[in-house]
Image (cartoon, rainbow over all chains, first blue to last red; front, top):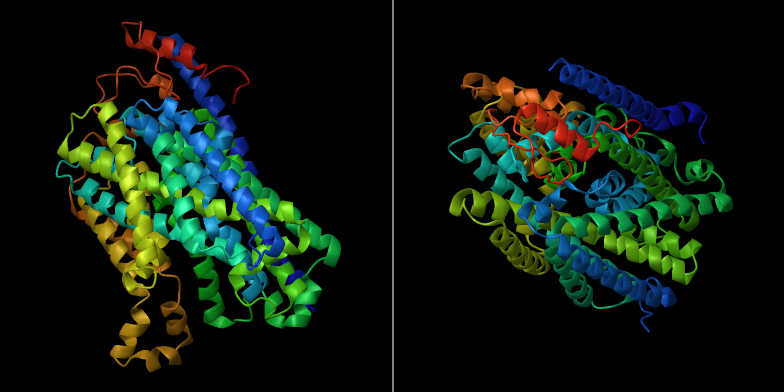
Length: 48
Length: 562
């Protein structure tokens, strides 16, 4: 591997690490959004 | 016993496994045929396919031979830059799951649309039929063209591996693929994708691990072969490097416009399961792209530069190097089957464009479900046969190249911007959408001919003198086509009158599906909305009762089931 290998590896696999973090954020955020939606829905149902 | 192919004595295992595999697929088709009552069942599995199968299917139907053979081949030829095949695809797919899947799933169920052209027509309130017609034609040409190409490619690979005449693989594989698709529709297609995807995924996990235990990390060996192999730009600099990376990233722009991917969102059983399906599909992508890249790199280490005559054989040769005959046979048969798993999905989408969009939409709007299913099966048969014949006979002609080479990009540029805008932008209009589809398709076709055109006009030398221009002309056509298509969509939409009552349409997106049961809605909401295709006879007389009954029936809000 050339001298700048560490830099290359960061550029090579860095985007995939970022994508993995994005996936985790989406999974957690979407779960919370579902819960919030449920809470809102139940609230409006009781209101009727 | 065939032994003249690349696989040598393992060729018998390849053939045997492939034959057994095709028979299993036929069994899946036969079993699924019992579940086929309506055209919804045929085209999107009655919206009753679970999240894990949907996640696998979404990936397997899209990746096909490109992942199993193309990415390893690319890594063998260019080095570590081939990892960038996933640079645009992975985030684009996440965007599709996060931003499009739920909206598309909810809306298409509310309006009872099972195809994208019908969805466009309803959402854009197009009475002229132009949006539906143009999108259905684009879809039929490109998806239909894909079908035969995949099966012919699988037949050719079978010949390379085993020495068996390609016509045998094409006819045998083609008959089975068309057969089980015809019998089992979306159910059969999704479940076969699941098995194919699982085997391919295992192969791309185990192959690099086995290679690692033999060679360690490949980077030092690659550097000794050539410095470009360890360069993230494959040795390119300046504008060439920038446009090279843009080309890789632009592949992802095709995801929202490819209907065989989008129908997976429409076919999932319940809206809340989309999150899990997204997780499955995304993890599949990470493993597959990185694994496929390493397969190509380790092949370079194992066989050396120029050690493999045809780069398409990189994956099969590394498989044969590390696995005993029987296991290699299974993996290589799965690689063949992966091509067919894309063919079945595309066949189904092309069928739906003809039967649901054209026949049901224009010719006979009152056709019964039984008739639509029967016609769908007949069209699948006819279209499958015609596609295979076309691909086999015309494989060396420019028409074939046009359809195949530009299918992914053509669909991406033509359909993608309209799909995204329909789900997110209230101001989009039918006219803007049609203009965008025409500009997107035309740009995709013309961009690759740009070099020839510049040559005719005598401008090639001027372009060559500018690194920016030569990089731009060589960029993957989907990049400019998507930008031009989107620009056209925005400009024409802003110049034309938007449909009325769009706010009501958009209300659908932000509510749980089970809460949408009003017959008063201008979206044409049915009086009892299903979730997961499980129709429950309505017993209530008021809207609130209907909602409660539906919630009970679907267990949608059960604790701990998210």
